[in-house]
Every structure is written in C-alpha cells, then in structure tokens.
Length: 325
Image 1: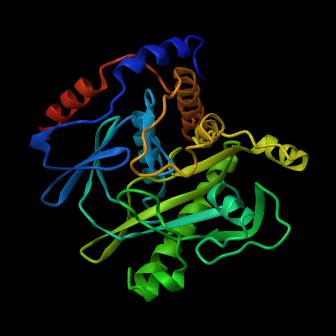
Image 2: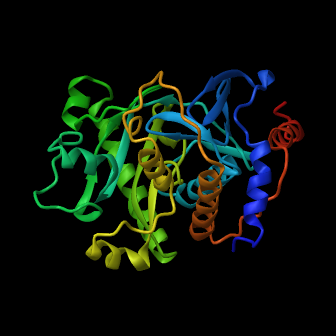
C-alpha cells in the first residue's frame, strides 16, 4: 500500500519530473501529448514522460506518472496479447517501450459503459456523440444497458472530433473491414478489462483504443487501460453514490479535469490551442500522483515503490545497457 511518507517523496520528486527527452541517437523524434517517440527503421522507442494532458492540451507534469503509465500499459498488453495482437517488443526501462513501427489508423475507438465525461456534457446540450444520442431521462454516471462505441478522429493537436461510423467510412478514413475488425478487437479488450477490474474492486468506466497496421495486420498500439486513456471508479461505493446523486469515487485523472474547471471556469473545458496554461498547484499534483499510485496498485495487485531519482539519467543508462544507445 502507499507508504506514510509518500507526500514527501512525491513533493521531492517534483524537482525531477520528466518533461521531455532528447536522445538524438535513438532515431527521428516525434513528440506526442505525453510520449516522446523515436523511430528508426521498423522499430519505435516510446518514452512515457510525466506530462499530463487534459482537454487535449499538455497542462503540467506529475511525479512518477510516466513510469506508472508505461508499467500499467505493459501489464495490460501482456494480459491481452492472446486476445488482440499488440505492438510491444521490449520494456528496457519502467518508462520505455520498444515497439513495432506501425501505420497508425487515424481513428480512435472510444468505448463507454456509462454516461459520463464528454458524452454527458454533449447529452446535457442535446447533442449526439459520434451520431449517438442516449435515451431520454438518463442521469449523469448512469450505466448504459449496452456498451456504446463513439469513434473519434486521431488529432495530432487540438481537440479530437467525434464522428459516426458511417461518416468515417464515407470519408474513407479507414477501410470498412479494418474498421469493423477494430471495433471487434476493442469490444473484446474492453470486456476483458471490465471483468478483470471488477475482480479488483474497480469499474472500467470507459476507455479509448488506438490501432496500427504492420504489413496489413491489425495491432493495438499506444496504450491500453491506463489512467490517461480510461476512467476508473470504485466498485463498492458506485451504486450508493449514484442513487444519492453524488459523484463516484474516482482513481483516474478526472479529478484533475474537475479541478481545472472549478479553479479556472473561464478557461476550461474549452481551452484554446494557443491559450496560456494557468498555474497548477503542487497540492493537486501530489493528490493526482497518489491516485495514479492507488489505481496502479488496484489494477496490477503490485506495490508501487516510489523512489526519488533522476528519471532522465536512469532512462539513459537503461537504454545504453540494452544497446539502444
């Protein structure tokens, strides 16, 4: 479990958070919202930084986040490799994944088990999401009778755009058979994740999957069932809180989205691509790091050992030892 002095450890690690990397010898660099990607020939080396994104903007850095994100994702990739093929080749460092270089499909498959987040905000405005309008009279955080799939575009910057399956196929963003294979794979992954999380006292509320093609073969890429790509609620308290109209107990970064909207309502959730990021308090960073740790431990059943260290230096040494540098 989380140790007694964890607040002090996290606070000290604020001085060593990994904002970005610059390992020119690794290959061609592409910097995503939270990951630095280095491509060389048929391999890609992905370094999970401590950057935190919300509302499609990089907002700040959170201690240990990159390590936890990569380790949780690696955990799920290992668990699900027999269900859907994934791009993992090697994990040479807690923050690093070496993967197959794939052609990214420009569509994300978003799966939802509950009416919450952006779909709830759309629903409140009478606006469908990906062409889907939930039944009248639903409440915030209510469970759907059946899983809902709301695909969106894969935006390099700015807000992703939710599109219906019909619109995606009409625009020829992806071939019909490939898209249907993606939906089937996403459904299988979500059902597995849902059941696994339930055994550990969690609800996998919703998540997104990204896919790529390697020599025509579909693979799940990027990340899977992490605190960045998914929402997690505490199972035992969900029903009582929902019936009272209270917010569920959450272990993902939704608390941070809420903090941003409460603290800076004039900026969030509709922050513009070029708008300055306002100051972020240390307390919310520490709280969020602890929630990431709690969800890491609940998901994996493993203790997260938080140690103050120079993350960039450790990554360099790991890559060198594994002959990637």
